[in-house]
Amino acid sequence: MSNLRRLQVIDSHTGGEPTRVVVGGAPEFAGRTPSEIRELLQSDHDWVRSACILEPRGHEAIVGAYLSEPTLDDCVAGVLFFNNVGYLNGCVHGTIGLAVTLAHLGRIGPGVHKVEAPTGVLSVEVTGHGEVTVQNVRSYRYQKNVPVHVPGYAEVLGDIAWGGNWFFLVEAGTHIDINITNLDKLTQFSEAIRDSLVKAGITGEDGGEIDHIEVFGPPMNPAQADSKNFVLCPGGAYDRSPCGTGTSAKLACLHADGKLRPGDIWRQAGILDTVFIGSIEESAKGGILPTIKGSAFITAESELIIDDADPFQHGIV
Image 1: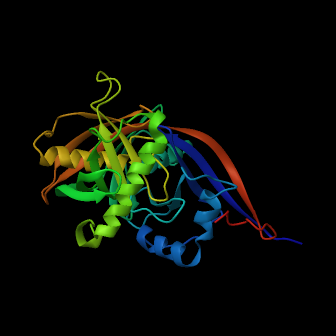
Image 2: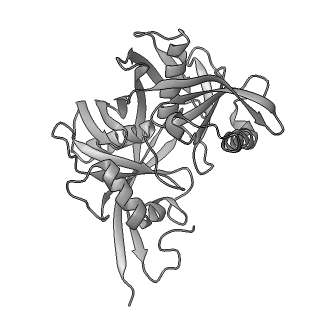
Image 3: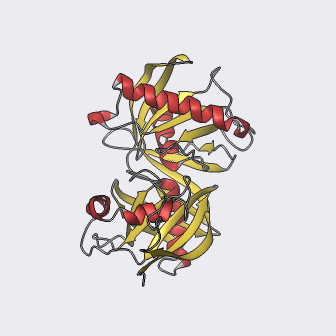
């Protein structure tokens, strides 16, 4: 007789990018911070991530969120994020998805709430109809116009910026068009950049891996957006949304160049032409405190069944 393990999950999408929140059935770690839980999951319980995200239950675009009790009194929840290859520093689209999930569960209502994450405390404002505004962690540009030789594309210039993850931001220019019909070319271009950064030893501050590549260009419709991007995430999947941490990094670069001030609005379109609305406050520590507004919608409530007789019980690795 086989043994069954069950995980309860709630799925949503934010601007087209899916989030799967684990709300029951996973190991619990009372009194542990999201950073500590991430380490415990990674070392001893990685099956939670792989069973949720990998085929046959998931796919490469899903970002998973482990929901925990907060350790800080002023927070309503704790969360950490993971994807098809590992664990993320931060995820703003996932935080928007988490907020609508908590509202769906009746754990929060309209208003401002705080969420504890590995990158710090995030402020989320729920305004109804799936709309959520997230004040992300301090974001900043680390280096400007960093050259990297990319085989097949000659020299590429990009900015290195932190928005909750490390990004290399490249203007598409003559390299490639930001269009959904160019997904394969955009993916190949971005993967070539990421590989070249690794080979050249180019990193974020303190040696942080630059695991996100953001290629940007003019929007499809200037009346709806100020820019359009393609973001390649760790694991080779592209972000279906405009990418919240990527938009934060973009806002930090714009501010550093004197092109964005407090009170200004930046409308960032993603590859599907969904839009995040960005604004900033200046941080006393340098850089900015970005605010990202987007919408998410619940798509499913599910129970994942993990049978120990199943050769792919923890996903197809």
